Amino acid sequence: MSRPLEGITVLDMSRVLAGPWAGQLLADLGARVIKIEHPERGDDTRGWGPPWLAEDLEAENGDPERVAAYFLCANRGKQSLAVDIASERGQALIRQLAKGADILLENFKVGGLAKYGLDYASLHELNPRLIGCSITGFGQDGPYAHRAGYDFMIQAMGGLMSIGGEPDGMPMKTGVAITDVTTGLYATIGVLAALHERERTGLGRHVDVALLDVQVAALANQSLNALVSGQSPQRHGNAHPNIVPYQAFACADGYLVLTVGNDSQFARLAELFGHPEWATDPTYATNEARVGNRDQLVPLIQAIFRTRTRDDWLAELEARGIPAGPINTISEVFDDPQVRHRGMQRTLKRGDLDVPQVSNPLRFDGEHSTSDVAPPRLGQDSDAILAEMGLSVEDIARLKREGVVR
Image 1 (cartoon, rainbow, N blue to C red):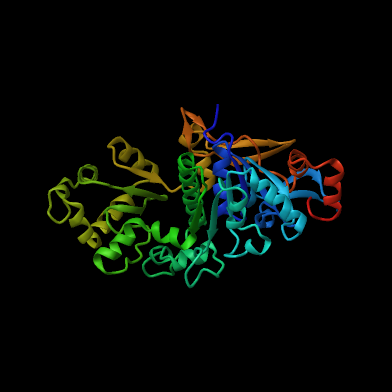
Image 2 (image 1 turned 120 degrees about the horizontal axis):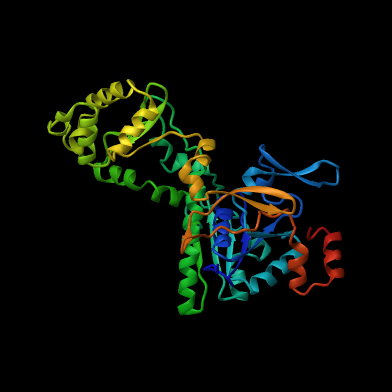
C-alpha cells in the first residue's frame, strides 16, 4: 500500500515523547524520518526503564543490550543517525541533510540550536522549502519561554490536574503523559498544514508548538465551563461536570462506567432499574435537572448497581442500548475482542528480536498505516545515511574515531 507521505524526508532532532510522537506518526504515514541522536546517550528515553526489552546482541561489556519500553513506544519507522551536533563536523552533516529535507522537528530549549547554527532560521536560509516545527514547554516567546517544560508540570500549570481526582482528595495527573501526546498530534497537524501550503507557495514555514498552549486548548468543555460561568470547575472524580449519570459505579464484584448521553437513554435506564417514573419526574427527566439533583439521584443508582455483578449489568445495559463498559486493566485491553479484531497490538521484527508495538489507529482504505520498521538501535543507520550523503568508508571511519558519529 502506498502511504500519503512517501517521498517526504523528516529530520527528527527531538527527544523524549512529544516530538518523537510526531515523528513516529509522520513515519507511519510514509515519510522517511531520520532520528538525530547523541552518539553516547541517544534519546533520553532509551534509558528510561524498567521495563526493558533485552536483545541477543551483546554490548562491549558482555551484558545483553537492552532498550526501554518507553523508547519503543514513540520511535517506530525511523532511522537512527548518531551524531555529535556540538562538533563542527557534526553540524556540517546536519546542514547537509537539511538541504534535502522537507521537515525539521526539534524540541530544544529556545535558542538551544542557534548556538550551533542549526536553528530553523539558519537552516531555512539553506533550504527555503524546509518546514520547521519547534516543540517547547512554553513557546518561542513570553515570560516563560526560557523555561524547560515537562508534561507533569504542564498538566499542573495548564489546569488539567485541578479537575482530576476525587473532590476531597489531591489533584491528580493522568496515567499517561497526555499533554506530550496531544502536543505531538498538534505538531503533526501543523507540519502537514505547512506541507500543504508549500505546494502553493514553494516556501516552508515555522510551526511553534508549546505544551502549555496545547494543554490550555485541550481543556475543551471545561475551559468554556470556566469562561461562561466565571467559576473554575471543581473535581468530580469519575463523574462528569455536565452530564448525569455519566460516571463509574461499583457493582457487587467490581466496577463499570455508565455513560448516559441523552434523555432517551436515561428513560431506558430508569425502566431497567424498575423506576420508569424517573423518566417523567421533573426532578430527573432532563439532563439539566439530573445535573442539578445529582446528589440525590447518584446514590439511588449506586444502590441498585451493587445488587448484581458487573458482567450481569453490562449485558443488561448492552441489550437496551445504554452505553456502558468495564474498567479494564491495560493487559485486559489487549485481550479485548474488539481491540484484537482491530489489530491494535502487533509485533515488529528487528533481526531476531520481536518488538511489541501498538498500531497507529489511522486506517486508509481499510488498511493500517503503521510502519513495519521497528524502532532503531542507537546509530544503526549512521553508515548507510552517511554513505548516501557521499562520504567514503574512510571518511565514515574517521568520523567514528573522532567521536563525531556512532
